[in-house]
Amino acid sequence: MRIDIISVLPELLCSPFDHSIVKRARDKGLLEIYLHDLKDYGKGKHRQVDDYAYGGGAGMVLMVEPVFNCIKNLKSERDYDEVIFTAPDGQLLNQGLANELSLRKNIIILCGHYKGVDERVREHLITREISIGDYVLSGGELAAAVITDAIGRLLPGVLNDETSALTDSFQDDLIAPPVYTRPAEFNGWKVPDVLVSGHQKKIDEWRMAESEKRTAQRRPGLL
Ligand code: ADE
Image (cartoon, rainbow, N blue to C red):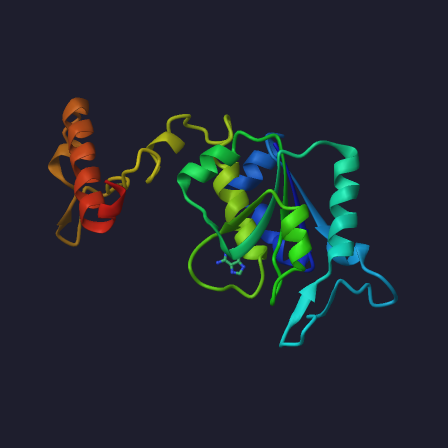
């Protein structure tokens, strides 16, 4: 899978993809991530990509032309399944959407910007708008990193244990059960007996019951 991320601050996105599971996905050649500086498509000495809003009001708005040219340039090289825009008023990201996007081949993510982007970008160039939660970030870069991470870890072969993503929270609309590691007792706090019993069927039943209990307690809306 290939993800092209367009941003006015691509530097913000260097580190998140250089560690842990996303790095592993890239190292294995399962995920390619390319960062594009929108300013490379800006006009003039200052490589201008934003301007005042028509009608007045605070904040600068991303201009349609550099975004159009950047996306056009990418599309001249290959087809894209989605052109995503990160915005607080977009579709809320959840595990179902991450699963769906992980089946795509090529995706563009355009990172949103302070006061937004010229509406003509959203109308004509974007296929999907995604929010990572009901709060406002300073820009869409962190949202792009979250989306990329959520998708990347789902690609077949990325996680060592193939069942691992399948047992994630939300994957079957349940919160994952609690997990423990050694020691079996610390400070008088004990690991549940069933987990050290070696009885796999009982362990599986306990995990399922804990999952259901947690989901009912913490996220009843999922049930
Ligand atoms: N840009 C600003 N806030 C955002 C959010 N919550 N989700 C996605 N993009 C954003």
